[in-house]
Length: 295
Image 1 (tube, rainbow, N blue to C red):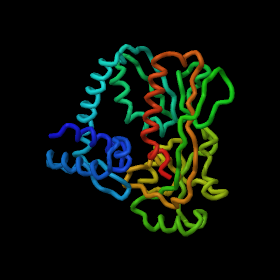
Image 2: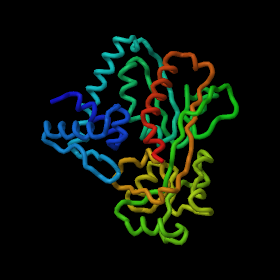
Image 3: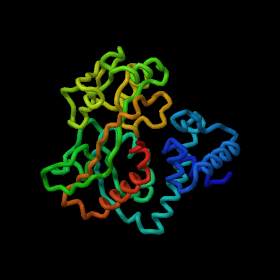
C-alpha cells in the first residue's frame, strides 16, 4: 500500500468532492481520482460512492477514516515535536454556531490537537453564543460583528446558503423550481421565529417575501435531517449540505450570503495558544473556500 494514498483518501472524505480535495492537495482532480482507485484496489474495497453531489463514504470508507486520522495525528505530532509546537498548553474555549462547529471545525480539529496535545479545548457548538466580552469564552465565531465590548473582531469568512429539497422527491424539486413555494404545496422547514438566536438566521424572506416555515426547529442540524428525511424543503448553509446524497439543491441561482466573524477578548489576544488556534482556523478556512462559497 502507498501510504500517501491514505492522506488523499482523508482529504476527499473531508472535502466531499475531487475538485475541492485537489485544490487542498495542490494536484489535479485526475490524480486524486487515480490515487483513490489505487487505494481501493489495494484494499479490495469500494471506499466511496460516486454521487452527483460528490464522493460519499461507503461503510468500508467510514471504517477506514479513524485509521487514516490516526496516521495523520501521528504525523502532526512528529511535526509538533520538530517545531516545538507541543510547548503550548492551557485551556481554550471556543463558542461557535451549531452548524459551523459540528460540520466544519469538529471534523478538522484532530490536526490541531495533535500538534498541540497540551492545549485543552472546549468547543461550544450550540444554538446561541457565549460572550467573549464577559469572558464566557476565549473566542467566538459569530454571525455578525459585535459593536461593543473590549473585543478584537474581524471577518473570518463569507459563506453561502441555498434552498435544498430531499433527493427522493423529484416532484418537489420540480415544483420548487417552477412555482413560488407559497403556491407549490410543499412544506417549508426553518427556524422557530420567536426564539431565533441571531437575526441573520431570519432569511426565508430572501427566498420569497412573506415565506413562513410550517415545520420548525431551533437546530440547523435537525433542519438538515428533516429535509433529508422528506419532511419538506428548506435553506441550509452549503458547507452543511455538501456531499449529502439525500439532499439536492434547487434554485441554484438564488444565493443567500452571510459571514462568520471572529471575536476575542483583548486580554487573551496575545496568548500563544490563541494565536496558534486562529492561525490554524484561518488556514482551514482558506483551504475550504470552495466549500464555504461554492457559488
